[in-house]
Length: 321
Image (cartoon, rainbow, N blue to C red; front, side, top):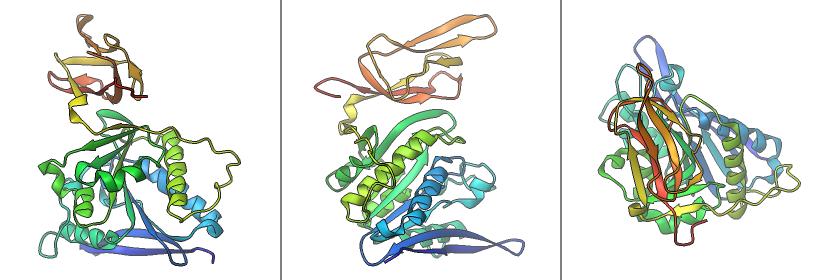
């Protein structure tokens, strides 16, 4: 059976001047089967997911005969944020990914959050796509809650990611979409990539291929989307021990001149960048790796204050790739 494309509104609230704020979904469905949801746009300045939604939607529309089941695409959970290039909900100084699961007796945005959760509940898998902030660049990676590792890690390994971070669920995460869904029995993986306000098409294309590979495993997709010889993905590096993760913070304020190292492995003593004083032409801090490591997060915005995050490193060793 050919897939059926249907656009619907999953949440709608009134705005002050005779308009409505709507969150929309595009559904591709071919018969009965599993349901995969791809959501993004929770933070309005994270645009990488827009390309992934576009590219995945194009493939599903072009090859309906290969689909078995349902794929739901939600490109804009925070449409006002996207329209105004604002990370949170504009005019409210509110991070949308801190108000889930929402509720019927709260604000308009809590009601929208509640509608979104109800729309996603019961899916076989939800992929929650994010970019990093303006300040940091991330390699293509998945974030998996430790409590859900056994269930989610096999899925994460098939997504074409370079790195998977299995982490404990901090208190602040309990109001995120991923924590809400996982705690209610709907499996959800967070994907982080690159930097805010930009689209990295290479990462996006790789993730789309990974989504199709996972869909094949789930019995939702047949064929290779026109690629006659798709290269297999290497197994991602998996960190399930936070003791291996080190945060490198700025020792002085200034301008950080970063080396192009995000996603690369470095040796102990290798330079990550320099913090400089442009007024007097001085190097204030020579930032170097304290050990052999994978740089999975790197500073993108050059202005730093003492204590600003420079990089996240995964200590390598013990047979890591």
